[in-house]
Image (cartoon, rainbow, N blue to C red):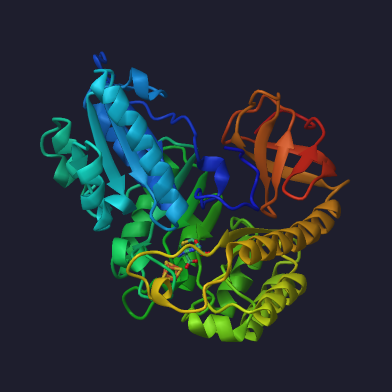
Length: 456
Ligand code: SAH
Ligand code: SF4
């Protein structure tokens, strides 16, 4: 998958640069691998993070990691359940795996992640041969399945980042207490559980000591985080920003986002100046139907605070088109909001009915043709804004953090402090900084000249 296409309509909802990445984790005591495993990730950063942990388990159990199913004794599909096409894709993979199993080329298939946690996984078992199904709360049981003793204890702090990685995820909360009409997350990930502040800080310190230079705080609604002594996400972010050299967080909910947190992004040098704040719709009527808990103007005001406090920052969002009951007027309101907020990128999704959610049973289905047109209109509006904004970066000299070393096209993929993705012609490896002038810009990505000076 492209590492830059931020405006899209597929299942891989996350900051794309971490997806499909070949892990650089090495076991402390390398073992001669006689078995092979392949781990495929679908969906968000939470899943990418879970996959990294499972990767560590299979390696510790003596498996070599391979990229192709036909080379693997064990295949783990770590899945997403958020939209129906995500499930369809997984079914396609299960079909192929069953064929390979019959041919004796794959021995075991494990299904983990959000589909594993959903009741639908039982139906899948009727159609496909699956050896192990795990939800998101018991991923550590994979350890037992692959013959690692006593792993439960090691992995119970389920939220750990992986030491020695240049960039690491730190989960600060799991689950979600909202009940958005369309969303399966609360039913598969459960209610919100917050990790204690000191525990997070300790973890960040440990990672930084081990060489991590970029920490991303993760959760479905990170800004809903609550700690002891009525501490809020603001307090946690401030602490973490003092511990790590580069920090970002995702995802936030507009109802929880405090103005002081937005200002903190502008104030703290270590915070990447990028905000992902899903709005879903620009129509008050639809926001109410969706149970989002805010009006479009309140969202606009938050964005004003962010733009004032973080003058050179980037803003991204999630938008759903074609939710049941969405009228042409509602759609126009969304286009108006997109115009007003001038997003730097957006994930635009066509509504997908999910079993068990309120929206799945709602009247007022939007015909596919209409949803597709609205989808394209929103996408175009976002891209136009983004292109215009990206153009203003041309000619600027930027400090760029390398997220991926050089790929096939000879360019590394980096990120500016403003949160822009940049393609850089450099041999610098992931985790290093270079300084380079921005040469040109498209709607999704900037391009730089060769860096001046060596990587740092
Ligand atoms: N916790 C995050 C979002 C998790 S799901 C938040 O609240 O922001 C990621 C995105 O998928 C959502 O923001 C929404 O835009 C989209 N999404 C979720 N359920 C969907 C559905 N049933 N159909 C279409 N898009 C959906
Ligand atoms: Fe889903 Fe809404 Fe919770 Fe986000 S806030 S995970 S969209 S229920």
